[in-house]
Length: 174
Length: 283
Picture 1 (cartoon, rainbow over the protein chains, first blue to last red):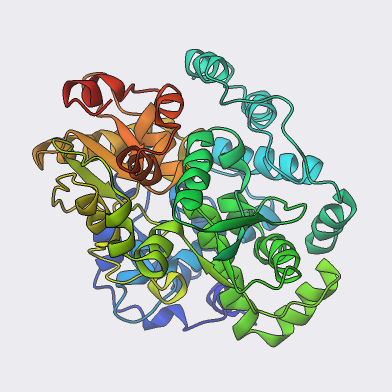
Picture 2: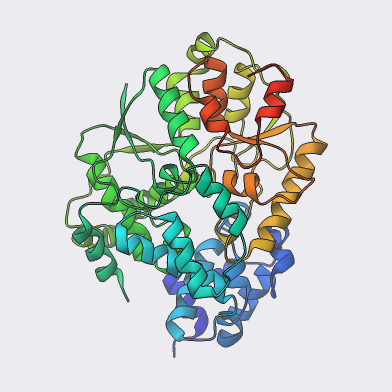
């Protein structure tokens, strides 16, 4: 039977994560460790132990900012940044409760803006995110100030050939 | 020199001053920018964090469009877009199956004929510091920036191909040519929190405050960056009392070369850099 570890390794498609010998360089260099529920090397251990639900339910996989410091410094070339991407994809697919809902909602708002216009329309994307997350009032003053400075344009040019953009979204949908 | 140009979404909105200063500086340095025909978003962090194939196909659509112009170099000022283009190229070259699949999705052949470069690298290596030096008409004396490269320009090193990725020097060297006193510090490549800015603002505030504290400790009176996401966070997320003005490195090049525009750009910043520049007699 294919274990959780096998599935993760297969999707990363690079060196197997068992190469990790827990030197904890990834955790030490990670700028977001302070806010995570599990350290990065702990996540690797948990994958080896088959703790699929705990890993996919963790905040760590969503708080990872993809700064790639971990993979840059890993002495064994374990692609931890890619591993985090894979774990996020698996969490979405498996339908588990997402621990950091607003982070996923931001990604959804971002990508639906691309799907609609080919390019990000920042004001509309932010409104969409606010509606999705229910976080209506933060950054309001900042938004107004940026609008006054002409930095948030409501009608920016879009991609003309939207058929090709829609096709990309259609055919990469899982 | 004619190169392909990909502004990306943020350079048309929150990073307008980056787009305008890159265009002004390029013009003054004899670089002709050809904007990619009907470009679309690269997918940024949101695509690769949730859907790998999408994160390759979105940049591929733009690379294919750029290749049609027959130019061999593409300038990508946004560090996030730059990173996504380099990453897509890396995987398309390595994985034949993925390349064929992506070509089918995009509907066109991907040649891999175009070299993606960031303007920091471009100005340092293609234009050269000597040429830049000859164009400087006013030294930025008294300006003490720390160069903030962030993550996406440099990492992972085998993809971004940036020299000295733990202690990069190109932006510092450019600052010195402009007459600014670039301050050494250990936080050149520390993350600002990037894509967490809306979903998890408190983390970004924590990270940016640390950067500001360390910049001050290094004796800096401002920060300089080449990334719209870093800039947005530096300019808007630091706590009151912690804030230092931040610049795009191209804004400072334009200021030192006497190229028109800086006044208009500085007004767009959240932390107004004009009092600092005024006190140093630079505007």
